[in-house]
Picture (cartoon, rainbow, N blue to C red):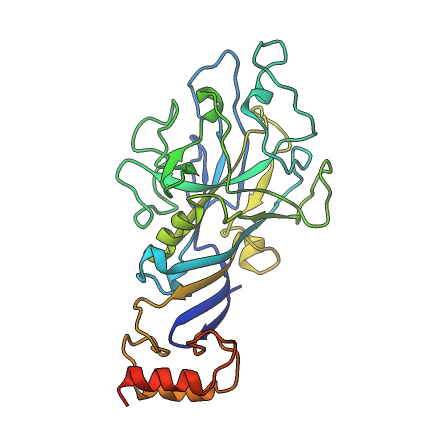
Length: 334
């Protein structure tokens, strides 16, 4: 499903789009079918005593969206005004843990007998959305869903080619795949909620995990703007919910290669975005965005006569009228 609405009038373009994933991948060290699995599971590995055999966020689902197909890239990161970002992905089976809509402190994963341990005051463990970071020469545009798990060793921590990444205040990324071992609480972009379910309930197959990103967090809009400028956004879905080899139930999500997705019965991940691309020049009276004030702008201005349009109300008195006409005529040179 691809839905797009574009509103354009010189000074800015507004985009309201919903797009399907263009690449998804279950990132797990022993995944022998990269890029072609029908589902991907999320689970954690939080051993005690601490050791570094595997990342704590062991099973991750990576989802990528080629945004440039619907939202023009290359405008410059600072010109993208992001007003809404919601990612959805559908369970391909029952969840392995109750719905938890809060971030859990890393110390709640420690055994209760340890001095640092904190109690987890609500049931379940959260499913969390992070940005994606890259290493070993991969980046936002060169990583593909069939790329190797690691160009290093599959054992150990912080060695994935693409990984769950926290976003710093400047829009930079850092690996949070082993935040438990490192001793810090990773702050996600969003925690999954399941419409139709309450916290503490178990979601079943077909339930939609909904991640509504808080765009007011410092650095998040910068990170998203850089992705839109490049034409691609990549995310990691993870959880620290425990799992054991042979578990009958793991929290799994549909990936785009799933037969039910291919025939339209179920959806893989989708991204819902509301974005405004602001004009790239600051010329008074330039209503058509060509960085000059000409007769074309005058025509647009006259079509807005006697409205409260903020772009054409040059003197900010709440109405487009003769006073504004005098200003634009002066800028044109008439």
